[in-house]
Amino acid sequence: MMQETKQTQIFEQISDFQKNAMDTSYKNMEMMQDRVEKMADLFFEQSLWFSEKWENAIKNWNRSCQEGCESMTKTAMERFGKIGFPYLS
Image 1 (cartoon, rainbow, N blue to C red):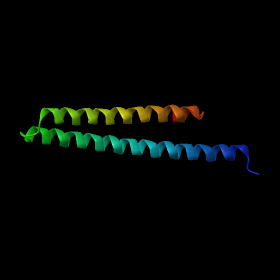
Image 2 (tube, rainbow, N blue to C red):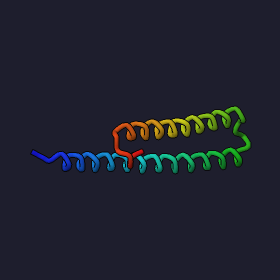
Image 3 (tube, rainbow, N blue to C red):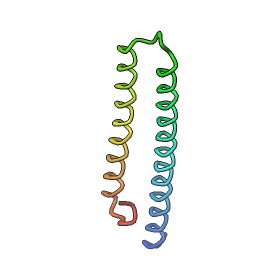
Image 4 (cartoon, rainbow, N blue to C red):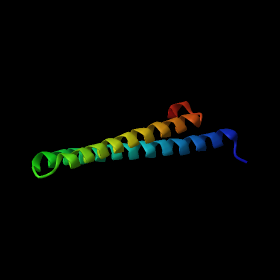
């Protein structure tokens, strides 16, 4: 039977891996969101035919995506904090 400290170490490694994977995924999503937003802004500036109504719709959509990413990160960090390892919070 495994010792309790060995089980704790395994659990800490799994938790650490999951947190690192979540952090990396979030950073990638954030980078992609920034690039798409910059590209959309350039498109709106250069397209005279594009209506302001659609521009506002796209900007609202970008804002919603950004808020969703922030909410997901906050929730994930709260869940990792509930695991009980102080280095995860």
